[in-house]
Length: 138
Image (tube, rainbow, N blue to C red; front, side, top):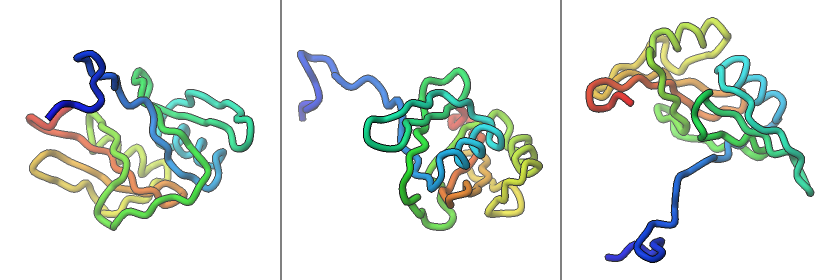
């Protein structure tokens, strides 16, 4: 089957650059994602007819989360909607815990692919820090 997004033999899609994270309060979310999680503020731009276009991301990486006003999604317990890769899951777990982050489980979860620690942001969005191992290390 031919790729419907191909233009003259080349894929016209390049990469995903941002995704919206629905939040109830942009300033509160910005504080959490920068001061607690450790992401950097990337952009804060007014829009013609509404909230500002506010983004955060991992330093050195071009992918961004847009902190956009809306009703946060609810994932099933035990799953995470957003995953942040870390070098050392234990260190990330302890650092975030010391900053007041409440984790789903009292300790890091171990899986065949690596380790994860799951938590919620102030709006209830489910996130996790993840450390892959072996072929799953990024």
